[in-house]
Image 1 (cartoon, rainbow over the protein chains, first blue to last red):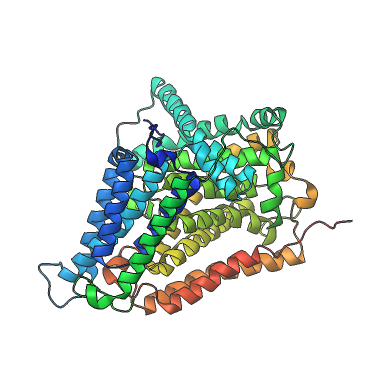
Image 2 (cartoon, each protein chain N blue to C red):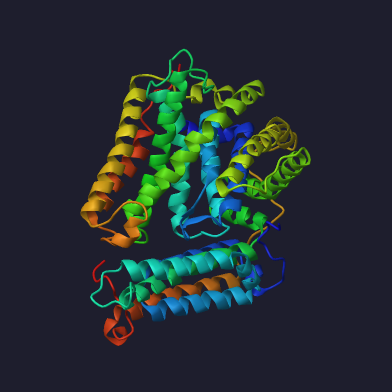
Length: 263
Length: 273
């Protein structure tokens, strides 16, 4: 399984500073959470998808399509059944259906935005960007090292599983609960083999001067360029416009579906 | 709470943060498909790890749980709720090791988390459940503030989803890991400087009591306020609907969450000359 989300391409989005991309992701969360208007939410979703297309990152959405569809289905079904309403068709109400669609768009929008960020930003850039945002270097180092370790740990556990299978462990038969119980003894060798390397890892870091000085130079030089400031300016204008138009509820009253007024 | 920041000067602790985060994320990601609430939480056997990591590695386990959960979120549930997930999972590992020391559940002369006695196993169960509830309180309160998910439903689901693996799976994992971690000198109390390790004492007891009260008060009070607002437990919470974002829930659960953080600062430190 390819665990890396980053797609190595040369696109305008890839060339943006990681701080810009982080802020764009954050602004998309703000927009997703602040509005109930289908017009605004759908527009933001389209904008995010266009941004993802500009970064050639939409292919990664295939990896999470099941999660996105489950969120949408769960939202629509649950809210259309649960929302109080005087008129129903079987168990479902129109207000609940619309509310469920709105919640589905909000949640999927945030997940897609996060996935685009990860698809267009290298781990080193994420760590470098966090340091530029004044996160302590050691914290950013631990974060980027942990991300790099995940595929290695998965590979280790896979090797352990294969070794146990060759000794007669049957992981494929039995109910879901029985199969999960069979995996439990395999967790411990994985934990032990990973944690065993702590002392050697620490010595290797210190032998290379880790922690020697608080002032560090870095191979990756991050600088905000004109395109970054322009992109941020446009994004902030879009956010301001969204809030402005949302306040003008007369113009959009016909399009607003407010199921729970005042909440 | 001092040790949470002073631990970063130790290279071994930084490495343990990375390893704990990587392990937690590696065990979370394969189960992302076993969804309980889409975009929010899923069935998580990996929840056996935070309590164990907290007891063995202290603040490194807490940071590792927080970062590992965030990395796991990258694979299907990254959103604004991830911020509360970060804090919640930090508390999931932090609360157990704080209360192990502060609440007086184990003997002062033998505080090692080796589970070699019934008292220690009982203490483990208590701190694991309190850690699970603390995590649920923070996350459910956060998503109630954002009006995304009803507090009662989410808090009850997360409490169960955290408690069961941490108790059922965590005990055998800790029993097996402790002797090895001790032999390799990787217990957090063996790595950190003595002046940075909180000790049991009057202030620690007060802090532990305050922390437990905040967790239980915030959760029980929040649930009562949520039920009063028309919410319901577990999946019935979604069918019941109810008022998401009601002031009562926000206040009570919010006070519990804030109290949980503030109580971490009340502890006894070794006397400084």
